[in-house]
Image (cartoon, rainbow, N blue to C red; front, side, top):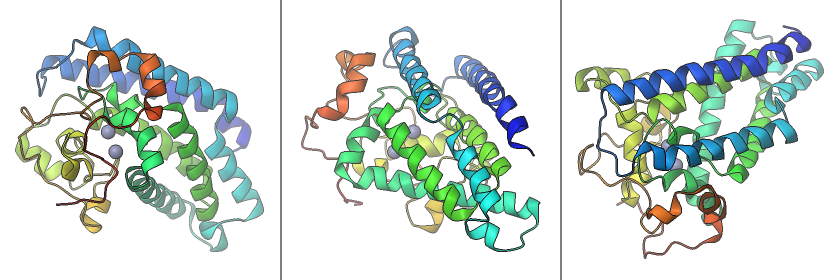
Amino acid sequence: MATESISAFEPWLRAGAFALVFLLVAVWEAMAPRRARRFDRRRRWPHNLALFALDVLIVRLVAPGAAVAVAFVAEERGLGLLNAFDVPPLWAAVAGVVALDLAIYGQHVLFHRVPALWRLHRVHHSDPDFDVTTGSRFHPLEIVLSLGIKCAAVLALGAPPVAVLIFEVVLNAAAMFNHANAGVPVPVDRWLRWFVVTPDMHRVHHSTLARETNSNYGFNLPWWDRLFGTYKDQPAGGHRRMRIGVEGFDSPGEIGLGSLLTQPLRATHTSLDYSRKEHA
Ligand SMILES: [Zn+2]
Ligand SMILES: [Zn+2]
């Protein structure tokens, strides 16, 4: 696929997929909420969505379509692992998507383990409710750092441009699906979570308990958590009664866009430090 044709429809593909999946998940949540909300949607959504809009704006200004562009450069110059071998295009695309997902898993673990990175990632976790907008609630600095890591991974892998675009669009859609304040029936969930991270699986990751926060890092594929021993089946308190968020950052005063942007500068108020390596 030519560079021009991919870059022409890429913003529309991203925006269209986002709008469609957002709408579907929002309707699903409204029809069958999994948990009672602590705050009305009207309190949180404008701020979570404003943060997301700011993220999109910054990426479009700083480095629009950077990961796909890096993939084109790698392809043209024969850089990266997959370009070093004569891999059929379809297999290269599949391998690219799977390997990028592993890279994002590794990055997510890193953002929990390194205290300074946790302060950025904590903005995602401190949402006192868990719903479709939580999936887009990331600090702009985390977004920019993630983009840098992703570009490095794309270059090292020599991932095909089309694989990078598919990965980014699917990751975005998966993040909205697996943050849904909804759930598929338990027997279906048990089967489905062998193939994709489900809302019940990712909700465990948003628990206030450190041992649950530090589990289920996967965003798309659930295999890495099982493989690396970070998988936790269910929250100890049950999905309806478990506490969600980060203690000390769950007051109404922490919901606003300004507080979200400055939150990384504030220390954890409580004795709980979520970057600790405790896995008890
Ligand atoms: Zn996390
Ligand atoms: Zn999350």
